[in-house]
Length: 271
Length: 257
Image (cartoon, rainbow over all chains, first blue to last red; front, side, top):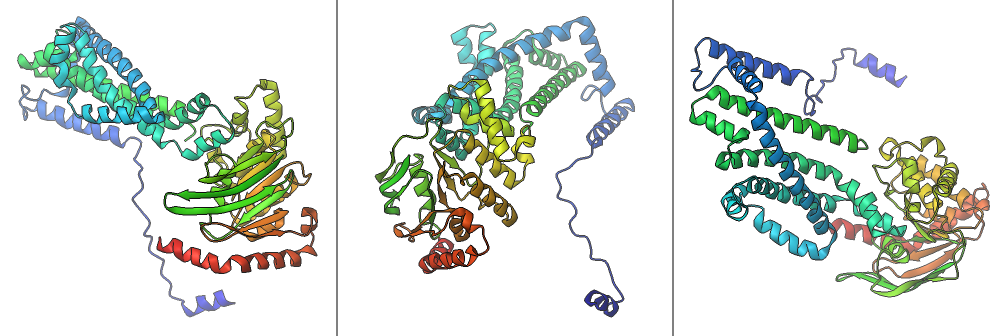
């Protein structure tokens, strides 16, 4: 009765304006690819019509041609394999040490006191600045380049690991202790999976750090490697080759990102 | 096995939280601890369960636990404390992993605990897929798997809605019915305390001291009957009159903190 009466009294109705749109972190599935294709098309058009000097900015087709020629000549694999070897060995060494030190800092009061002091003091140093010193210590071979990458990866990894360990909910650790679960099992079954999201996020950063450092190190002292190749191309004003190197680096970064995405999907499916 | 709070006092820095609290929980007995907010109820439970060292006094055990008990003092946590990356059955099995039990024995204990809490069909489910009530059932199931002598329950229903609370309370009554397992039940809900406990320890405002120990004069089975409701309500009113003024003071103190 009341509802009906209310409807009768206010016969002229108007809808309540919707005010809840937007502010949703969502993106369209193909939007990014379409935008990328559009930018490449405009870039190509600007190059083809002579609007942009190809010496300063070669067109995408020219860069693609340069990559193709590098591939069939075998130079691409020569440079890429040299870089991948340095990144791979340096990243694994840096990550292994970073994970060990990060866990020690996260789990031991003594290690935290000592470790955080050293990390705070040494982390801000640009690791590439240490390359000359590392060459002096380790010689002019692969070792100083690998050590530079390992150092860069180590600090970021250690920080992300101990931050991850710190972020493991204490209630889960107390729960485990309340069941008399031994320390090693708590680390393996509670701390490690609890810290894994932060550790994998750290991997994403350290992959970029490794890429940055390998290019820098190769520009300073290497015959082969993508960094050396980019530098040589720049010196010879071969900008299509230079950008071919940049594209290869970008693709490498994308591939690493995808691998980490896959790892996250597989290992963090519970989130 | 009896659990004894022996003159327990505790301070967090300058803040005195508990002051000379002594009482005993006999085998199979359910003791509720109630009191105003911040009176140290949860702190007392952590001390009794060995998760926090008291400033003075000590928690003590008298007598041997049941032979098959794998963890005589077992917590049921307010926030469930489930491993989010583990399935229901993995969570329930977690406290058994470090024991000497074989995989078959562990499996039997997990199956039994899941059956008793109605979780058998949810064994492969992850905690995030469950409602609050079901998550707490997993916490209870995990506690049952280690065959505790005394359950230490820290406001186990406070994070749940009223209907789920009612259903879980029925589960608690059923699980504690045979008297084989005792419990210390920390709550701010007097109805829960009156429904479940054999005795109710009433703590004063911080620092928590024992104001009174109230015995509930009927069995848990009798409390489910309609005739008992009036008596239980009178009991709740009696306890509320003990703590009402202090609860008001405590609330104001928390708001000004």
